[in-house]
Amino acid sequence: MPEAHPRVTPDKNLAALPEHLRKYCQAALDLGASRAIAVKTAEVPVSESVAVKCRVPRCYGYGTSANCPPHAPTPAELREYLKNYEWAVFFVKEVPTEFLLCDRLDPRRREPFRQIHQIASQVEAQAFYDGHYLAFGLAAGSCRTALCGPDKTCQVLEGGACRFPGRSRPSMEAVGIDVYQMVARAGWEIHPVGGATLAAEVPCAVLAGLVVVQ
Image (cartoon, rainbow, N blue to C red; front, side, top):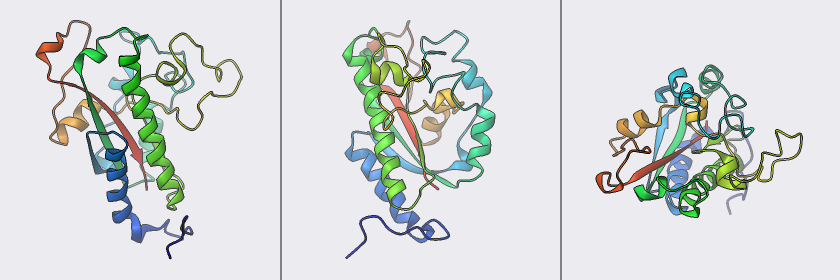
């Protein structure tokens, strides 16, 4: 009978990694992702230019949560972290374009971001219990808006405890990952969606998450 939580081996259960990566991709799909693939961490595009977009023009989440810039890991830090890993699971969720054009208070906009945080944290947890104990997940958008609600402040920045420590994660963009490039390289469709976007002209919007496994 297999162990519920396998023992950690000196190579961090490397022999089981291919099977585990397939399992995590399927888990992401089962949790609501539209697509999921295993990717080499060396091929994850990280750029300071992406993090600049949090400030120019300034994002509503900038400086308002412990997982958003300037509190999130920097692109330079992430590049160093990724040198210690080889594989990750990248997933996307397609949502109706009009959802991302809603006001931030609208539950239709908040719910897809909440789901990305949920998928990232749950797949990360699976990897951890499989012996990949240094796995970490990245989500989409501000955790404060997605989980706490845009009308609440971040308790961590006020010296308190996070309301959702098991689910809140930095966004991929916050740490400098070029999500547009990752989606395009995977062969999937993605379009810029902004305030001037007409929903009828874009087939769907895309949110993404990443779980760095081993």
